[in-house]
Image (cartoon, rainbow, N blue to C red; front, top):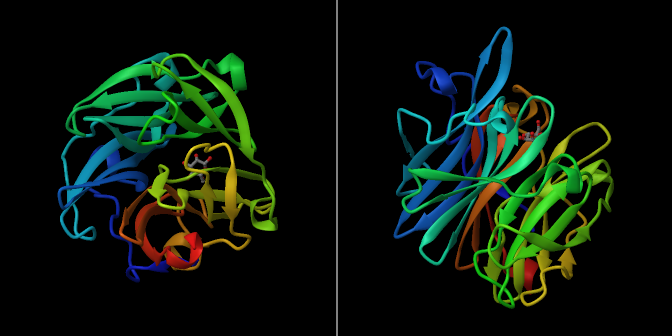
Length: 293
Ligand code: BMA
């Protein structure tokens, strides 16, 4: 499987007149429902003595390409000591009638996984840190599965350099921690991490993830996890499905990066929203038919 860019240009770029997102908009979670694409994206405003402080903004679209944005962020940094330096990389999952956002809480030293819950994707209630820092150290790249499996909620996360799965009865206490994927191919030699929220197919959970090579180039890859036992990797493609090629993927705030936090699957059409060089948001698509069969 290979992703094909929907256009030569990004679908979302920073709004220069909006302070909190004037310098970068990138890594976004996406949720598609009733004909509307909802994006929750990481936005950055650089200040000379305070670079790289992230908020999370909201955008929506009917065609998946032309987005309208809210004036204000839906989540701002600084609500707690853990989030003092930013809220980053949101991943969205709908379970029953609630939306869950897992995001990175950054305090300028440690990264932790945090959760927020919403009924409308705009008003979010913080639920705090998901796994104690003492358990895994720095952790991020977390995403929830859209349904319980064997009565338990399932979460992907990434203590460096591997992808883990943990489960929970109540979304509060997490256990059954299992490493499910380690770096394997040259392009993911340094580390891997979950990308988009897991997408259900009849052949397994489709996982679009990122891999980082020894030169810190970020690429995207694809794997399939067993439907009933998502700790089992059924398939993993050896070649990346997307790598930095366009100017806006090669050059930005962090060069040579394609990084996803969200994708939509409609029939066999996969639509991946991704950050280009930590600066803009691009869209690329693929037919997953050959990959899952
Ligand atoms: C990762 C995350 C992402 C970022 C990537 C490349 O560690 O912080 O938000 O896109 O690095 O800089």
